[in-house]
Amino acid sequence: MKKILIANGTIVNKNTIFNSDLLINGSFIERIDKNISDPEAEVIDASGKYVLPGIIDDQVHFREPGLTHKADIYHESRAAVAGGVTSYMEMPNTVPNATTQDLLEEKYLIASRNSLANYSFYIGATNDNLEEILKTDPKHVCGVKIFMGSSTGNMLVDHPLSLEAIFKKSPLLIATHCEDEGIIQSNTRDFRERYGDDIPISCHPEIRSEEACYKSSSLAVSLAKAHGANLHVLHISTARELSLFDQGSIEDKRITSEACIHHLWFHKEDYEKLGTLIKWNPAVKNKEDRNAIRQAIKDGRIDIIATDHAPHTFEEKQNNYFKAPSGGPLIQHSLITMLELFHQGVFDLEIIVQKMSHNPAIRYKIDRRGFIEEGYFADIVISDLDKPYTVTEENIISKCGWSPFQGFEFRSSVEKTIVSGRIVYDQGKIIEAGNGDRLLFNR
Image (spheres, helix red, strand yellow):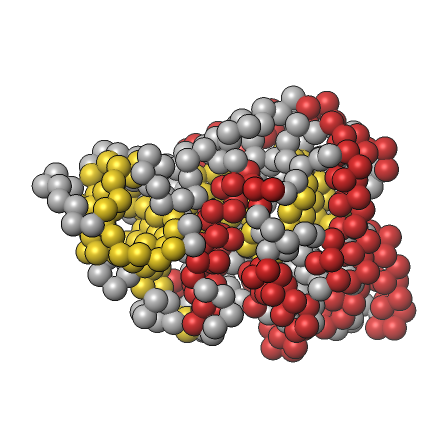
């Protein structure tokens, strides 16, 4: 592999912003210094550009196998690198559900052939697969996913003894989707009595309510505390849940939390314009919830920012409340959305890098990724904060072909993405420079 010299860039790394050159040799960062010269290196002039560690997205749904009419690893990994995401961790609610070692390894095999970005896959928990969870190698698999709310197939873990056993015995980090199924079903019955099958989409955050989220999240936290489990609560959507989490450095925590792009950007009033296109589980809720989540990012109660990228076809999303599936594509635009919030004065660049790159690497103990450091893998994104980017049907890479941001002009753009020393995205073009690596974990 060739050498690459990124010259004159503004590097954002470890809560500092500084001007420097960066020399890549093969898969790794060899040197960070000013005025580097290497006649063998391809030179990228990054004057006026920002050089960030590649984004690590710890929650995506790439739909393969079984749901590839919506998305697949090939297309979504290319959407990822177009958005500056160099590594992802993908969820087990594919078809069949990845709840055994054999089914899990089938997904790794697909990614080894088709993924342009680095990858890992969660094993899914059920009420009766603890034996499979215990077989999982923590050095080669990112975690175990527990759906404490309804999902695809046999993946609702609602038996108290099953939950206790997983929290007590799991060798892996436990990532949870927290919504109480009983509350959701009760709310659904109430709203169906009022509206029949024509429930307005604006009722979604009342059906999948604050109470449903808090009851489930508080149960997960109490189980983790009781058993000393390593817990990561995904996609926090309410202000009330924030009381469950402590401020402080992620290195010192065994219970952490995540916020997603849609809960940081959208709020309940947006249902009027976007309808089911912003139907997610957990639901996008009130502006007050969104603003509280933003504040929790800044004060350290929320540790990681991810996407929950979960494509469906546009036709599927056009159905009524009950038939329109929850989820949407976000991975291609996650970084520029956060950079837009930087322009709006909501977040600074250092905290964006911390929550999207550093902290996922620390929380999951990923081997030599997530930082711009000598000796680390060269996973890097170069962004132009002054080059506008408009989302159009023509430049959407996700297989579903649509985005809730369609027509929006962002003030920043991703210029280049480098994965393990290979340029895979350059000014709007995907470069087929070799597949990404399976993530390894120092556990």
